[in-house]
Image (tube, rainbow, N blue to C red; front, side, top):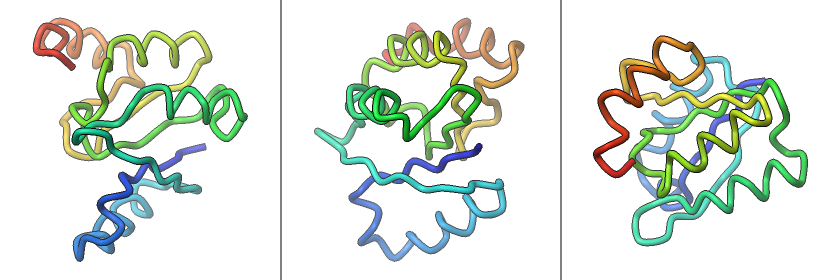
Length: 113
């Protein structure tokens, strides 16, 4: 199932409807709202959603950008253990396909994602 993760601060943003439309076009069946702390998503919030089985193996999380998630590499490793994938609306690749995962690690992992 594709699940759209929407940052809470965007709920009040007039661009919120555009985000909903993008998620719908991508095929998101469910949306989960997550809070930002210092402009980033705390990975523990996503881990809690996995532990509560709101996100399950085989699901694909859709985020606005990989850069909004703090400690992204650690979260990615955790999600991969559970067979959960992650895509970005604003990046030209996703982390669902192996070739894109290696592209991410080769080019972005040293930039603090």
